[in-house]
Length: 281
Image (cartoon, rainbow, N blue to C red; front, side, top):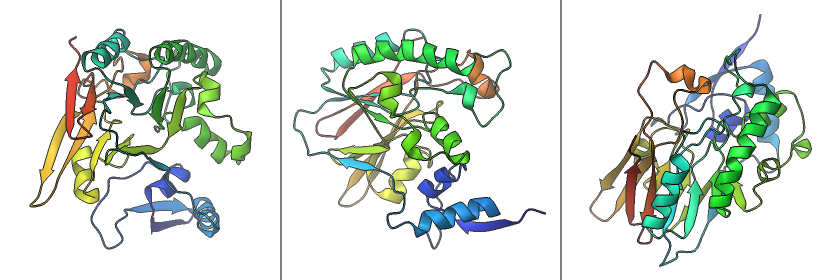
């Protein structure tokens, strides 16, 4: 009979164990509880015994008076909506942007999902080649960009971990996707605004826990900016929206829910002016 243990996990630890990251809740430790198996407990022990435990990589940048960032929503290539690339290019030009952030899940990896996949879907090699062909167009339009690593981007790495394959055997995202100018990272900060994929909960929830402005994706049906204002501070939380084609077989799991919010956003004025832009459909 399998034994299970109830323990608190940091988001990075939950991801390492292949668990769905739970929303942040206020409790004495600041982290939610999970049920883990004996095998997962052993992996957790090894992880915590390492001299340098796994951390979310955060890259900080110096403030830039002239920074105008275009933030592109989840693509899930090759299942991105027709016209979304042109919409993002037009938004970049309209607001005279000079920097680009992809908010994560640039590739879907449907064939490698931990959930049920479509029996009519493409095989691994075919889906990857289709995704690379489409991502090449994004890289041509935006050759230099920060790319947040989303849960779908990480699927292959998670499968490698569950098969005990050392990370040294795995190629870098930019090498597989042929995007040498794309900087794949977990999160980045510009002008005191944090950009992250957003698996830990909504943007409005994150600003209450972190007290820092944040821009994130992951939640396909949400596109908004909400402000939290105090006596001596104000921060905003923004959900970017996405660029997915909800009619594709890879998105069948969400057909019974709300339709996705197709959009992107820009962040101007040294991180002080976030603007959500939705695509006319």
